Image 1: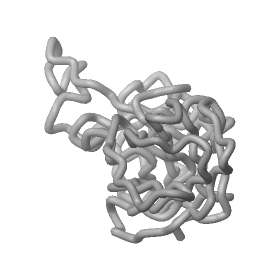
Image 2: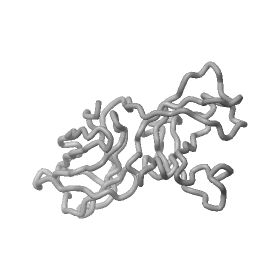
Image 3: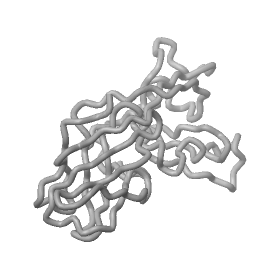
Image 4: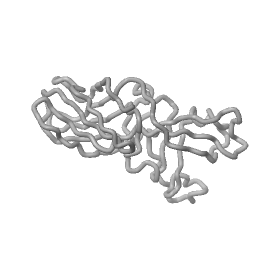
Length: 210
């Protein structure tokens, strides 16, 4: 639950337990939030022979542990590519007692049901948006917001999968323009939030990356 991407309750927001925290090398300062990987346990007696691969989503950061060697406890130290998996995900392809297993992995498109989800924080003069349930590349490189009485406003990256705009947007219906970090595809979520939008609420759309 929670984590450095800001997705909150992973069940409510569609991610479930097939998730992992990425080492900082993979996390890319939060731009890897929402990316999907196929993973296979590889060359370990703990691997389940009848499992080909599982697919996980990056939802958190596994920070470095500089007091430990990268091959003995400091598994998330740069430049190591490491996945700190949820227990239910790990147990789908390896025996839990192993703790650490070698894996083969590759990036894959994210298949998401339903549209993008925008969770709002802030107020009428500062809008902080967490973007969730992103399909396709799963990641985001940039977002712009447009009020019903404004032009497009570029939002700055706050942390994880959150973006902010310092603008007076209260009382306006809000639309978003989102570009994927990996695929460079851009989509528009027109009127994603009504004019009476409020902080603390989440708004769903019908659009998503394919």
